[in-house]
Image (cartoon, rainbow over all chains, first blue to last red; front, side, top):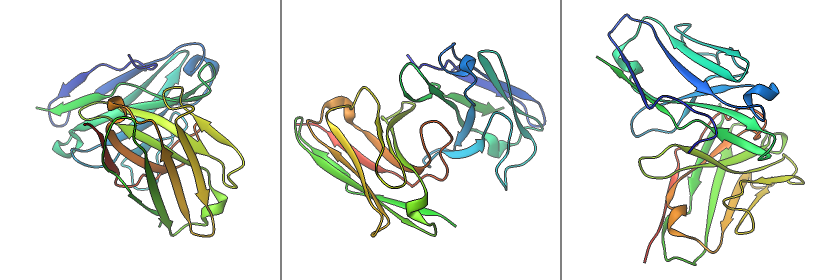
Length: 111
Length: 118
């Protein structure tokens, strides 16, 4: 079991909006450590999508946005496109483990 | 643009050792902390280890503590991961990435596959 909990899968039609949740605890997300999100396309290395809860690296479309509240965070994707079909991971720091932790990943299917 | 290239993966027997390398280019390597993250086949991401820019501070996941050693040679712009006492559960693609456990990882290398099997 991963320290951060994500739904195994989500799906949506092209053009729709989907959200992916990431739930932690008082030793990570709830301890005010930032959440970061990664996109992993099939057969490729992960790519940073959102850093510091809600910041997009250069080149990431503004269709992707992040938010955080309490012990949970969310990634929202609007205007779904076929190219968004990928695995998405959240990541934070855990003070009890003294290390970085990831969610189990969410597979996004574009119908 | 920062580029990271891992090497050194392969097939190793349980109990064996392997050393991974990650060559960096396009960055002032010594200025940045680096980490290793792995992904078992069909599974999610797992942070493995991190090291500060000067190599003075190192961090390990409990699953590898005492068996793996992270190091770097800033004169060669290269990050290493020495893996000893390897187990079947260490089988994974190992990625190097710029960043510390307390923050985000960006960018990532393309990964190198380590298979532990008899």
